Length: 262
Image (cartoon, rainbow, N blue to C red):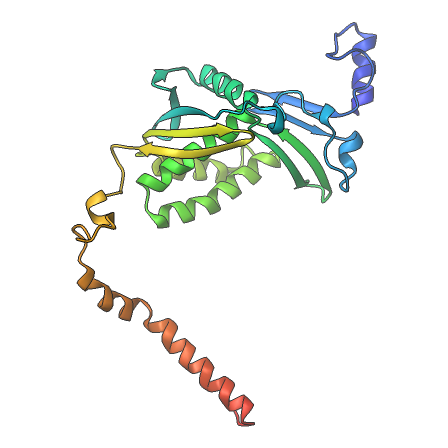
C-alpha cells in the first residue's frame, strides 16, 4: 500500500492524519530515535533538501550562537545518565533529542541501498543518535584495545545490515549480540559532548577502566615512565617485513627498467 492509499484509507475510516487528510509531500517515518523522510522533491539528487523537509531539528545556521556541553554517562555500554542525573533510557533519549534539536545536531543526507537493489535518497533527523553514538564510541576508544575497536566496527556494520533488511531472527544477529555484550562490559564512564550549530563533538572523557596512563603518555621532557630507549629495537622489528618487501620490489622494478627478468 502506497502513502496516498494509506491516507485515503485513513480518511475513509475516520483515522486522523497528522498534517491533514491530503497526501503529504514526503514519506515520513518517526520513532524514538528520530525521523526519516523520502520521496517528493527529495528524490532530485542534484538539489539540496528544501527547508520544509526538516521538522524536528533546527537548521544549523539558526541554532544558538553559544555552544552547550552535555555529559553522557554509560554503564556496560548503555547510556544511563545526563549531566549526572540518572534516567530511564526513554527519558534520556528524549532529553538528548531535545538538546540536539535545539543545536541543529543530527541531520543526515544519505544514499541507501535497498534490499531489492534500488538506490534511494533518505534524509534523517536523528539528534539523540548523533550525540549518544559518538559519545559511546569515544568511550570505547578509551577503554578497549585498538584490535577490539577495529574488529567491532566490522561487526557493527553486519549487525546493522541484518536489522535493516529485516533479518532480526537470523541466528547470526544473536551471535553478534553476544560479542557486543562482551565488548561493552567495561564501557562505563562519562563523555562530555559539545553541541554547536550542527556538530556534536567529544571534548572530555573519563572511565574507571581507561587504558590511558598519563605517566606513560606524557610528552614532557622527562618522557614520563615510558622508556625512549626501547624505541629503536621496536622500530627495527616492527618494520622488518615492510622494509624487506620494499627492497624486493625496488630490485624487481630496477630489473624491469634494465630489460631483465624478475
